[in-house]
Length: 606
Image: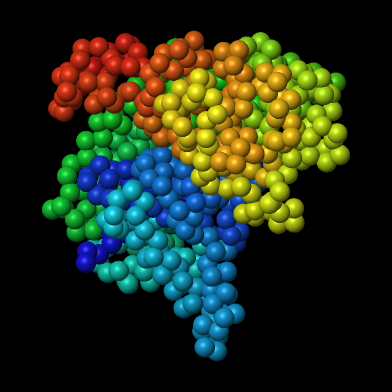
């Protein structure tokens, strides 16, 4: 049986260097070389999962098909590699300690003193080996390579058990099966304009002192490393100069895999893993074209995101990515206007008139409005006002999770005249509860008690925008994360007043999709379509929002593509593509790609 190969990505000097994107890009590069790849993210915090953490603290909570609430980097892995990970692909200190303590309570250690070494470190290694064998790409059998990202920074006290375990693990799997890539910072001091290597030297020295020796350095800097800087790093860090990669600033993250390829990172990895004879050269043609197109786009589409956590973009990372995937598919330059929901409210007009005016100016100038999910009552009234503005002024609107719920509340208040209509989340005593707590939900435990993961939605109407966007299918599977839902007792009144519930669950008691049939684009969904959006495969509903926002919804609906992007060479029949389709090479773009984008695609290869 073949041996699994492991690539470990660590970070040094400072957090936020982009280890997640680097790990994802490495995985993509190896995949394009013909290898099957899986990924594991290690988060050293004590929380069992990311589900109860504030978005301000840790960015968005990414939800997997199996209902796992995990770190946002797993979203990057899924988007780059187009795989479906499980909750076990995210290891936390909380999970490991709970696993070991549960075994201790059962008496599995036969009276031994339970210690960090060997019991915790053994559990970490066994977890990695077990999860690495789980196929995530829909094929049979284990992957060829497992890319592991260790969260945090070398030297963090909470990371120590994992570093010790990974040091042991490198010996356990043996030479030729383990490659360590260390992501570090090489700052440029503006005063002298010199690239400084000392922070990376100290970081590598600390890493080696803990029992791990890097095989490859991935250096984050504002510009490519000078040759003399590479030589200095090579000398002091004991890493070959050919194995020192520069990850300098780029216009968009789709360039990162290209940087790695151009600097032969895959060859360095293959050398360490003893794989040179079974791999092929990565073309990354689709990524090259997409990255170039994204840089070239100039016709804007302006989307207002009305949310609670607008001060931190990582809070809505998957939303942003889904909007980007859709806007590139339509050949438009995405401009996101962050609108703090509370700034739209009447109280802000009294307390901070400038913020109130600025928020409303952004909202009124938007081509489309998106209200994302969230928890708590802060800013809810502002979100309701945003939904009302979009509904009355016929502005394309997409409400996700709470965004759908507030759209229902706004409709009940404005159209049905139920002025006190509300969610029991915000007013437990409301006489007109449009949104209620799920019967099976827990009011005492927060973690993992919501309706989570992939659930099936059945279309109720054959002639509606959402069903056309999803390719006229009878049902869809999308990921959920909520503990409140539309009150089924209110549905008949709302439908009679013109709100269409076009998607429901298998019991027809849970409302999944709402639409206003006479509106250009007004859709709310209880699920989170952003979690399954991919570069090249944008979410159908986001594609619809962007299409409606730039006046091209009919073209999107007629395509029936379920959000398939048409920017890569194969799908636009690019003359440079060596694999002609059955119709031969077309000279014009097919389906939804614009002439301008296609022309640029030709230019990329000429």
